[in-house]
Image 1 (cartoon, protein in one colour):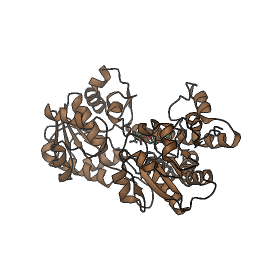
Image 2 (image 1 turned 90 degrees about the horizontal axis):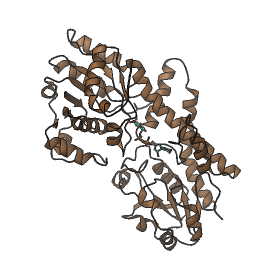
Image 3 (image 1 turned 135 degrees about the horizontal axis):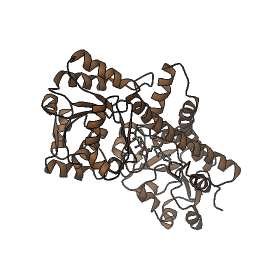
Image 4 (image 1 turned 90 degrees about the vertical axis):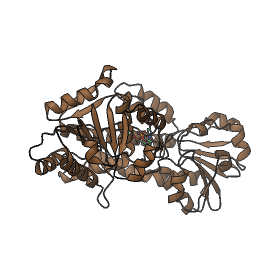
Length: 438
Ligand code: UGA
């Protein structure tokens, strides 16, 4: 099938490359000419493992192309995706849909025949109705079903998530829309992927509800982790024990410094705002938003307490800046807020991250960036692990002991390190939701 993808950012690029990999002929369009030019030269603007080779292969085999000219890209297409950004709108937390409306108007102005128009961007309930109204107004005769096909891609494992999904969700109130989407995803469905077909509004809401539920799950274990610290229990075992119940499941039950990234914080807020617009409060979701925000200063307090209440002029080595491992994304990263709070308490921060340092350098002040984890740790009074990169997990305890000042202290906000092993080497380990090894 012939596919046009409007928006060549994270979602558009991954989805476009994966649809090409499934055998479709895909053109990714973006109004940013510089970005398209770089993509044509094989330069991938985002950090996503495996994406560069996937794009390279599909471009070489002529299934994937990049363009700025929307009119040419839409000529003769079967499916048009809108995959533009929907950042939080300044001031009110609603999703900013200006790029979505602009894309819908461009499609209405340029489409030359029947096609299906699909939103991949995360958009509030009712957006599909709005897009349909735009099409009806600008091109009354054109028969274009508007479909919602939300993405469930995690940064860092987006290609696997697309090609081996838990489910493909298609929301449409039009039988032809469903039929075309079934044909589009046929290669995935033949490999056993589950298709969930529903109405358009359901699909739009379901995406927000899925992210909000995961945010609830993470916050729940974070709260239980805090309780474990008070009562002397170990959250790792508590989490494992509850996760064995199939109704709960083991994933997204790892305590940490709170969820971050470009999705959970934005989507929980937008969902709460939608509810307000409809005269109700999502009290559970609102509690989660507030809890997660409070978690950042709470993590800084945890570091302060571990240091005996004094951080002034202490050298603090912060390991990890990205909001999670496997990405260079620092949007809503707990690490940034934790660092700023440590600085306010007088601590001097040296930080390291395998991928996110260039981004972090733009938004942090008075932070020294170290080229390696070892350089970051050398001579520090305390190491604070915020992002659980694999290379930090592999740091030998003996080496940590040599690098840190006496008495060596590690505050491990992800429970990434082996507490017992550190203790054996004389390092004090303060983890999440667990008693300290003595
Ligand atoms: C999330 C969802 O997982 C995707 O399904 C969704 O498509 C995407 O948002 C989106 O809406 O586009 P992502 O933000 O890339 O994906 O990251 P996750 O892997 O879900 O992690 C989110 C945050 O939760 C991170 O800060 C992570 O460290 C934290 N987390 C996750 C925990 O603190 N504990 C856990 O057990 C799991």
